Length: 114
Image (cartoon, one colour):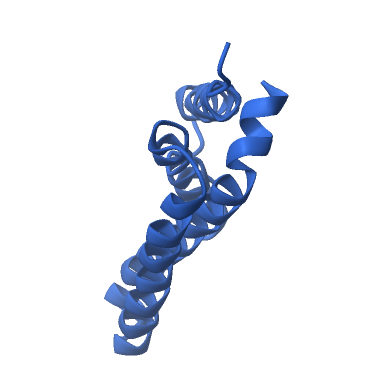
C-alpha cells in the first residue's frame, strides 16, 4: 500500500486540489443564483483551475488511482452544503462521506505491483 502511494503521491495530491477547486467553483455557481454574476465568473475560474490541475495530475500517476480521487469532491460538496448553504446533514449523508473517504484511501493504496 505504501509503495502505491509513493508511486502516485504527486498525482494524488494534485488531484485532490483539483477536486477542491472544482467543488469551490460549483459552490460559487450555486451562490451566483442569489449573489450575482461575479460569483458565477469566479466559479468558472476556479472550476477551470480544477480542470487544469486534473489534467496535470494524470502525468504523475495511474488513472485507476487518480480518477477515484475526484470522489473527494462529493465529500467536500456535502460538507460545504452543510457549512455554507445550511443544508441538512443526515445520518445517510454522513455515512456516505465516511464510505467515500474510506474508499478513496483504499484505492489510493491499491496500485502496487505484487
